[in-house]
Length: 228
Image (cartoon, rainbow, N blue to C red):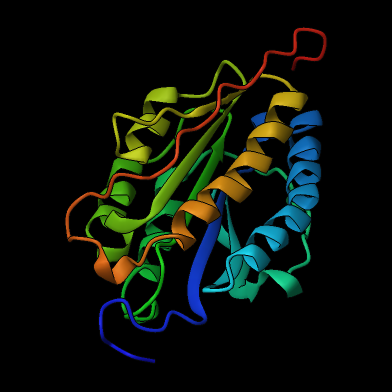
């Protein structure tokens, strides 16, 4: 692979990481809908990856509740990825999840030459730990600063200020998912538009500061007949 700017781009990885709130407030229909929405989005992610052959889309998942842990610990090519349902358990330790992600955004384990990673945060509540320390850990990594970030707020109780700070860009807003229909639309959008944004730019060519992200989240239609 050439190191010359503008040189060959074959098989540059795009690491896509879901960060999923699995606290007790997500029990019942919320967690069921979340599992369904992500499972149904996988074929669309494969289609986007096939349309962007310069990118090798790799997926994995972190869940956070009383503890944070890797649900899919190893990056898996999207063509080989199979969704495994997540379950609810405990509190909302977002900071621990962010700290786990920050360790993966170092080089190594991240390669020196890759496309921007995608961090997709989904939450329905308020963090119960020192989440800002985890966010600072991500922002302290070169790949964390370059990452394309997406945030989805499930329900009216979600702390949108936390999600806004996670995005790190005043021009972006969290997606509001106040119904199952909106959640499905938000997951579908996050799974495709963010991957397109990451795969269409060369991370090595980006500057070392905060990167403006080349996409605009949609305004999702309200669904008054089907709300949580």
